[in-house]
Image (spheres, helix red, strand yellow):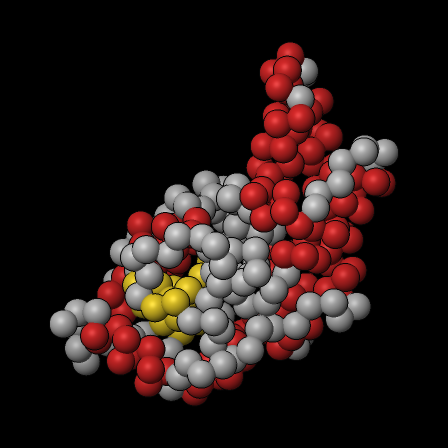
Length: 242
């Protein structure tokens, strides 16, 4: 087997497996209302906030924007409030996904099935929480969804969020594969920077919230995975080494 033969596909979740961001935004706004806050994130605002990876980190970032004197508040009280907002938001998101509000993007399931049939490993690399991953994939793949993935890296296992490569470095260790034998599939510049920072060639499938991002350094940028096959991925991977 060639040292660079493709052995694994590593997928981001939000925006990559499914266009979830509008559902996440609605869940955040639901949580703000539940907490009696007057915050309402619009699509334009949320598009900018997505430059910050992680829901709790996003809340804190915005809080600092609207309240520059936040440093004067009790740090523990602030974190408790952010945790509570995020808890309500996560429950609202999970309920929306369970009700059928989100489906996988075109070509995702087909490519996963083809990869598994060819003996490749699949992995997940995300900054979202485990409950969000489970809600989406349980609905899309079924109760046994976890069996399809050799490894999962999420907010609970990789606390340093993208664009830091921590989640990808951890996954490569778990998969016991060099970066040259894996491809990452992402939708954002932060995801691209995290993956390439770990040495991974990266396919980008932008979503409406990330289409304006800088994808310099990506192996390929495609609208979605509907026309992407395993043979095509191998071709792209090989061409990058010429």
